[in-house]
Length: 236
Image (cartoon, rainbow, N blue to C red; front, top):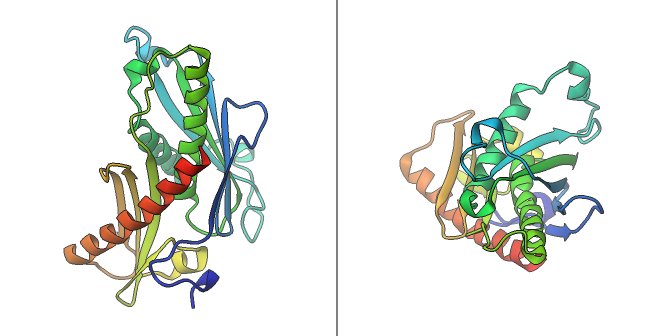
């Protein structure tokens, strides 16, 4: 039996707690099962140097895990002097995913920084970061609209993400750590609300997978992401 007595297509219990912190323009604590991620959105009235003459904005993301987010303590990456390869990969994914829902001309010459800090990890930290990050981003954008800083909403869709896996030929949705570490195939899917794909990450960890199986996994992802999207919108 899966965690939380789930069937193969079921999500873990998900909660979004918006406005979780006091100072950030947008914030949200997301819990997907035992994976908890604090996401914040910070707005800076400046852009990277390469965008200074283009009159448009930018979004970037940073990702980190607390030392005891995992079963055994891990050394803070700040103590190592630089982020590791996995961290860089994940924060680039978060940034790419959330940039896909923004019109940067409407955002204007400002930068949004999404910070994702994993408080507790039990699989799916990158997908949880994207889901919570979108809520934090939306809150920050709404504040700019309410202040009159923005005349038009630069957000044109939602962004949601889910992890899937395949074990012994069966598709599992929303993997916890135990499943993620033992699955034959590991897949992450990110979509807009219009069911437009932003990213598919798929790896045959212990077995290959067919085009037909990939299509089946995308079908499961589409259903799961629609449920996550409903909860994101309800949190806003």
